Amino acid sequence: MGRIYRAAKYIRTSCPDDSYNHGDSVANQSKLIDKFLQSQPEIAVVSERIDNGFSGVFFDRPAFNEMIADIEAGDIDCIVFKDLSRFGRNMIDTGYYIEKVFSVLGVRLISITDNYDTDTYDGDISLPLMNLVNEVYALDIGRKRRSQARQAMKDGVFVGGSPPYGYMRSPDNHRKLIVDKSSSGIVVMIFELAAKGTSTNEIARTLNKMGVASPGNHKKTQNTEHSQNCVNTGRWYARTVEKILENEIYVGLLIQGKTKTINFQRKPAPCDEWIYADDAHEGIVSVDLFQTAQSIKQNRHENAKDKPKARYSTNIYKGKIFCANCGGRMERRKNHNNYSFHCISNRTVPGSCQGSRIREDVVSDALSQQLVKIKNESLGHQDESISVAEIVPELRFLDMEMSNMENLFRGLYESFVTGTVSQTDYTERRRAHQIKMEEMKHRASYIQRLLSNDKRSKKHKEESMRMLNVLEETPILKTEHIDRFVSRVSVSNDGRVHFDLVLE
Image (cartoon, rainbow, N blue to C red; front, side, top):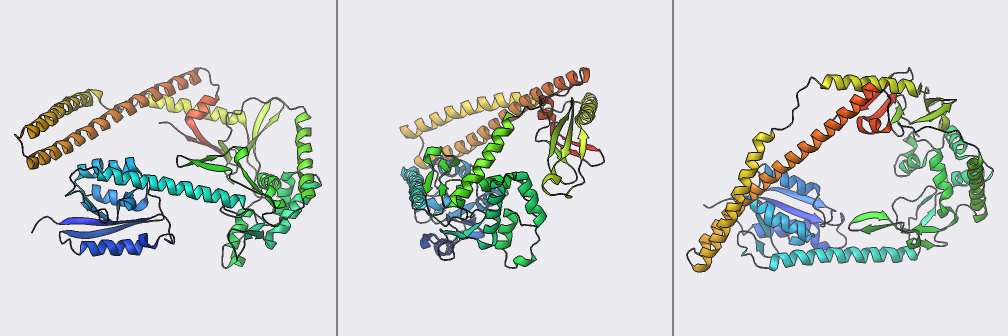
């Protein structure tokens, strides 16, 4: 009996429910593959990998990655799938995996409806053409979907994800927003308080005192069958209130298309490309109330700008100092010429934290001492960088061998053309040369990455040591020290400070 292949059945769908194309459903693909394998006694199925609801444009798919791991572990040496579009819709990456990766690993690929099998493929142009058609199809489908979505936006259809606080999807039409009676009253209250001049901080405090579920927590209760058992653990913050006050959706105006996809990446769209739909749904607040709240907020902002502000030095710990008790960020305050950090959780939820606070100079003194101590300890450690003397000769040898291999390729082709070598012998020897060439290229690439990483690492360590030497002589911390060495500062309510340092 000949060779037995250990195969993986690979199945991919773009939509989890397969409603758009029943022919490509998981069940139908599996049946097609099973029927084909009935006539292939040399293939034994050892696994089935399914990426249900994943685009074929990208190859970072869970089941596909598991299948690659199986190949690297030597568990499978054959992959069977319905057609090349199920394998991938990106011409360059699909061709790379088929012609480079799997050919080097000795993996047999079978695309059933395309009648493609690497064991019998003669290298004609049909494979690149099929991959190109699949990629163009994916791009065309994406363009049509975006066009349909934009038209739906113009028609006032809600194409977003979760409805904003105060609204819910209509049970009769999930693309239509209707007022959520359980939360719309809170929205009205927020606007009325803002119209009376109440600050966003004070509104957040009021809602927390009332025990009103935050938007995130309210959404959880709406999506839970036993919502009465859900505990309200969410908090209202000033920014949450501010986002509600700024959203024109509450007067019935639907604004969509604020992002767009460019080269498969989602990016902000210019304001002039946004799509507005009036009276797309029932408003929760009147236009007059909305404008009054906006006007009051704007006046407060203008008045705040006119007030003389104390001059602050640069906050080198910005975004990196937190309360160890509640995990909230700490605010920097100035008293005369002294700075200190305070936990601000009590501002929105009174009594939620014991209130950590600490002077900035205490934090800086402790950090300086710790960094200098680490610097002195590291001087006694031997550098564990790679041995360049050992791997550079290997890289030179590989370059020479690959050059020789190129000459072998040319000589083999000339022998084939002149008839000295048969087509069968030429094909087998060329395949063997290609496998060896790919192995050498892979090894050379790995060594080059090692050298490059080692060079960057040495440069980084030298720069770090220079900065620590300067800090030891002049113990004044700067932003560059925090950016390079500190990822997080945690302050306990008893004054203890913990630093999460980055030392590599």
